Image (cartoon, rainbow, N blue to C red; front, side, top):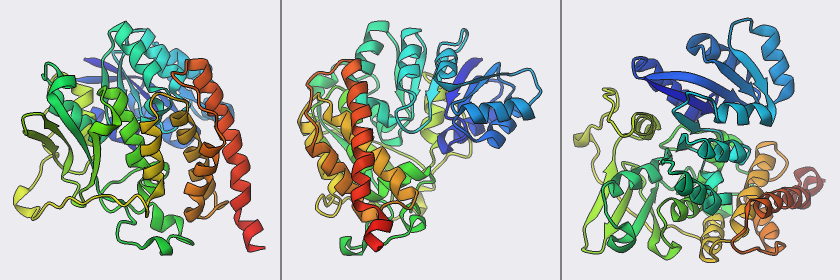
Amino acid sequence: MKNIVIIGSTGSVGKNALEIIRAHRDLFHVTALAADANVDELKLQIEEFKPEVAVMSNPIAAEMLRKFYSGSTRILCGPEGLLEIAVWKGADLVLAASSGSSSLLPVLAAIEAGKTIAFANKELLVMAGRVVMETARRRGVKILPVDSEHNAIFQCLEGERNPAVSVRKIILTGSGGPLRDVPRENFRGLSKETVIRHPRWSMGKKISVDSATMMNKGLEILEARWLFDVGPDRIEVVIHPEAVIHSMVEFVDGTVLAQAGPTDMKLPLIHCLGYPERVNHPELFTRWSEIGSLNFLKPDTDKFPCLGMAIDVARRGDTTLSTVLNAADEIAVAAFLADQIDFADIPSVIERVLSRHQATEHPALKAILSADAWAREEASRSTAQWALPARIG
């Protein structure tokens, strides 16, 4: 029986994880759950899985949950609650399933406590990759990537004795998102519904917008750089519309290993939850005779400047620019989802914030947190320049 802590249990990744646990109650036990403000959903999860403790990041939501829930699960709130469940005694694996940077300190605390970490939150490695990975190496903690692309690479490299020498290239695949066939001149005025309607994956709103701008692939380059200790010159992005191959590794002898399977987040999740064992889950299979052709295309960084900005940041090395890129993207995407800016203005906000940042090389945690806070304030000010009411008026 493996005891699981899920940070972000009411999001798409968290709910998929709980679906797997529901089907394999003989293998997994939910020890703790955490969510931001979705009281109704978390209450239902608590009543079904009966964790020892649950956390709501939002204090008002926590009070509402305490009012409507009368069971034995302890209800905590805020950053202190997240830190408490991250180091919960008896927990074997902490699944970081929430988007954004708010779970950085809980994840670092979990690593220090010796917990295995399943990462579904690429933002943490983008903003503080060196700090996270150095802490994991020092504590001997296994980092299991849940992102389908990085989980694919992880599986392709399993058992490879010296990847630093044997790997020629890591190839990250991406479907191209919902706007792959939409001309860039038509980006302005796109509705939220169009932007988040991903052709292959069912994901949360923030990551769906990142897929539409292709910032998602840029963040994945930065994540892969830390997870697999390779330079950006050895990481390539290719557009693979069918989304059957989740990523590939090319070795120096010309061999290419690819991990393939259904476009279902439960596939990498069940690998991480069960690791190092394989868990039988009959619904996850591929009908190979129905796939047809597989296509691979070069991404267009002129059409998708967010990808180009992320590549440039990766080439700058270990600096606070990656932290700033991530924070500015979070603010810009949130502003778009709140109808404050146009979709076409997201890259402009991010570019402006990056241009105003004085980068720190090899930053410690304090410098990372400072850069993150600065970038959020700067991005919030920058969104005002493209605010829709002002431009319409």
